[in-house]
Image 1 (cartoon, rainbow, N blue to C red):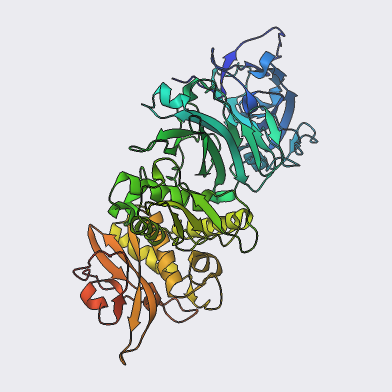
Image 2: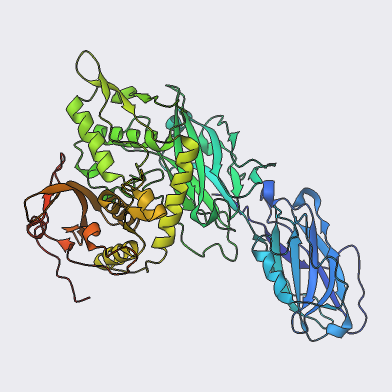
Length: 581
């Protein structure tokens, strides 16, 4: 399939052209590294310079440093040196540092200096050893016992501080369909550091787009050359956003797909372009680790999360958490749902104050929906997607002479830079909260844990804030009203794979008066139950969490809750048998 692009460098015991004759007790260190035959070395994998630092950990001594000779094409290095007899019998560590442009310590150290060996741990975290932030860094560590013997042979695995990103077509996507599609660009749209790498070049901008023309099919792209390289801190621990634009050549449409990567070093990611079944010109991008590319020491550590419900809406694999999406009547309605979400999440237009975005329906979506059908899809989207905090419900549309919808108006609260910033804050805050949810929980345990963590992090308020009724208030400012409670709990549970529904209606008081209110219905072990997070929350600043409105039936909730939904909500026939808390 794909040859090992990783720098899996083969260490050979050889005397080489420059014979080094050690005296008694000295150790000859003679190594030539090279990549496996047939492997393409390009971009960040090309070795440009390499230095080897020799350290005796037991005595904490810096023995020496040697500049390695880089082999033609940057495919390997050659190192010949001797270790003094004084270290015979001791374990010696050789640290290979590749393509480091600005090393500080221990370059200025004299041989035999005593120092803190732990500083070499920085070789595996990108820049702890570096005086300046630098890129293109690879490293390796080899240990051997000094004492007049050759260094043992074997593989030297170079640890890279970056990840690679490739693009490929899904299995079964025909060459004909691939030829209809050309990759227009791949763009990093948010990251925390400069120096983003695209193949051979380094771009200091935080947002840069690179054209990737496809001559015949996606499969005929040079798969050995990554689209781009990412560092673990690009985007912080909460991920890096890429925008991949796909152009469908027959009709000229450009489809922009936002992808969230939680990049890890020594990892290759494959962005697989797949057709959405039943759609003409519908595409999704699936993200996966690509072990065929990199098999290095920590390549298997951690688990790449699936695309989140708020980024790219992975309806091919994670649609089950969206209740109303699954109630739509046919494939065409689901295609409209996805199209509207995609526009709301990936818009590129900049509007003047007061201006509204007019979205034309195209292809088989144009003129195919009555206003009733269109509004049902629009309401389904807004009920499912708590992440839709940047637009209200879409109720304004234009009809053709036959009474079918041909365009609609979308009201955008914030333009792209502000929207991206708010989205990043939401994802970051949600990630920190969900990191505290243990793995292996039952659905009930998962719902209770998320419910409790959320209520201990938020308090009622924000009535005068534009964020009080959405997930920005629930996750960023920490002040929400009932709609913000319900939207945020829905979003967090969806992120954990629990189907959660936003419910609107009224709270009913003993004197017969009502006020608008919002709560949730969640699915646990195949059954539906109601949760009112607002009324379960304690007083402001308190860690108290109540359960009077936790996993309850319609009969229990109807005492003081009245559902008022245009789209019907599922029935909750019984209270969940709660244990004693």
